Length: 250
Image 1: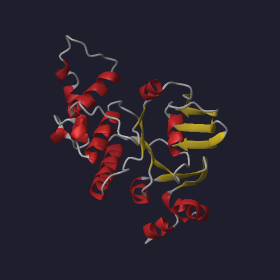
Image 2: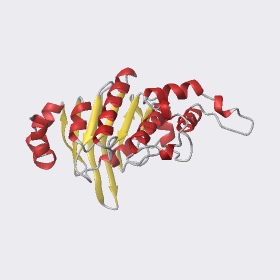
Image 3: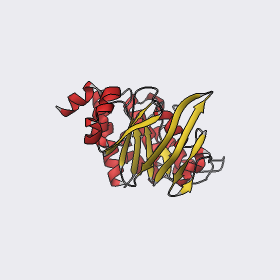
Image 4: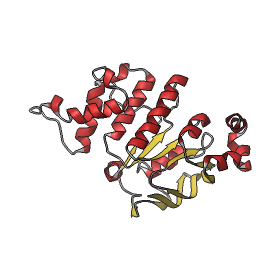
């Protein structure tokens, strides 16, 4: 479904990504893990058009997408969230999702538009999906951190993606917020038959969501496979997982 072939990214001689050959299978939930600086976010940026590769290519459903601007890639069916929350903090929860739906459908607001009624039902459906109907008229910037991440997820879903890319979806969350995020991600990907690609530093989250894991180290894929295979990989344990795997295995 989504593939990279001999993908490279260099910054002034620094090799951030080196010769990555990667395949995302339709319907799977695939985690990209690795130490800080391993190249996870750079890899996401290359897939979604926020960076252009130094060499190699990215293909979606067989078509070349490396070189396309991010908005074109979103239109093709790939939507992404970011490590830093990307919402309109002074707008309401409803307006944040409504604006995303308007943009996705190539419409524009103007003076004569009855804006409140545009995509009202679709907006409410998405907010119900991420458990934010109770906060529909709240100001987005005043939401608790976990709720803001739920709102960002709804904004991503407004693009009606087939592939959802989440960059550190539980970073900075409390344990209760993390548990709620895991539940939402699992429920939404299953109910909408989405393919999921995500980066995550919390191994309990990874093993609660992923059915396949790839490990990045110094910009290269060190290992890839089912969670149990990666958990037992000696080299992965040495460079990254370490004692966390022991806890997860207990």
